[in-house]
Image (cartoon, rainbow, N blue to C red):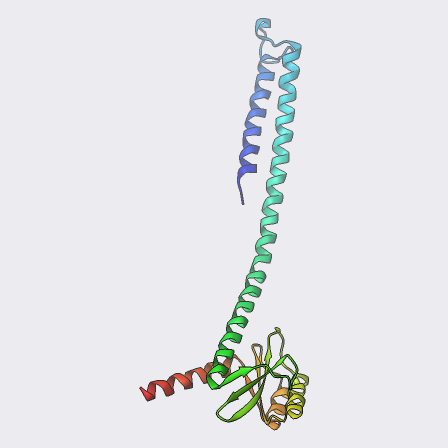
Length: 205
């Protein structure tokens, strides 16, 4: 929290106390002094009284502003953690999709085809063609997605498929994918494949 409001409030309080002290000491009807030569005129007495009142009102206002600023800061901090978590998830998902595409490119050529919908890509490599579905949205891939992929495979006469999802797959989607010859690639599977590739490269060296 910025302490500027508390600082101004403290200054206002000090000025109010000073004005009140002057008023009590030198006012026309001072209870502390009996010497009439030291009393203030009516104008300055009223001036000191108003300074005293206004300074304490100002101190009260600045204290309230400091309270609201502190409360607002707590609200911002409360929202900051979910926001940072959301952005972190988005960044991790983007990194995963990039690594997944790089992994697929190691197997062959990844390209769009007029035979299938625009949300699907074909992977050509090692004499085999696969239909690839990349789930870029932040949601679980369910059986409906896998069925749609399988229907596209039948329409394009492609025997194998690959579904890629950062958040994974439902149990029904996994069961249907095994029956439809569709490989599922999630975070855990991708890391396992990357480790196997590194092990094979190390063995070749």
